[in-house]
Length: 136
Image (tube, rainbow, N blue to C red; front, side, top):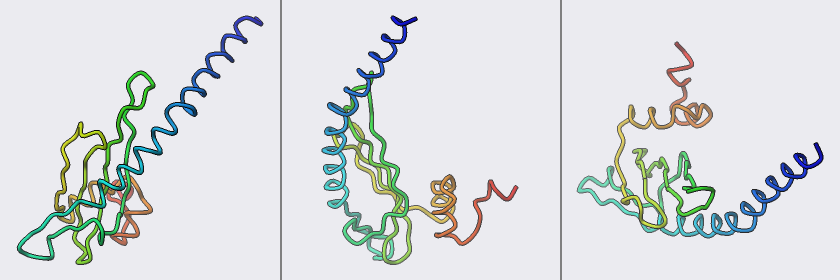
């Protein structure tokens, strides 16, 4: 009994050491790099209403996700829903290490609702209605 308890404590300690000694500092570095990549993004359009500039856009939903292989952090996937000053929605995806292509896509209202629907608070704030899945 004592050996199995010791083994479980040792495994938990190893996981915590890996997380807080190796992965946390790397995640903080990746987060800073992700914000720098995001700030440089622009999408120009002939109609200014459909243009995107990250420096002036408001981030509506921030879904950045760390990418791990066997517990080792190797990248940070940028996934954000933003709104420009004209009220148009955009979906921004990229990655810090370049494993995913940088993509800034204009969204119509239905596309924005679809991406935001799982966060009830954001959905209510942006569309002033309940997400459709809660009303059915």
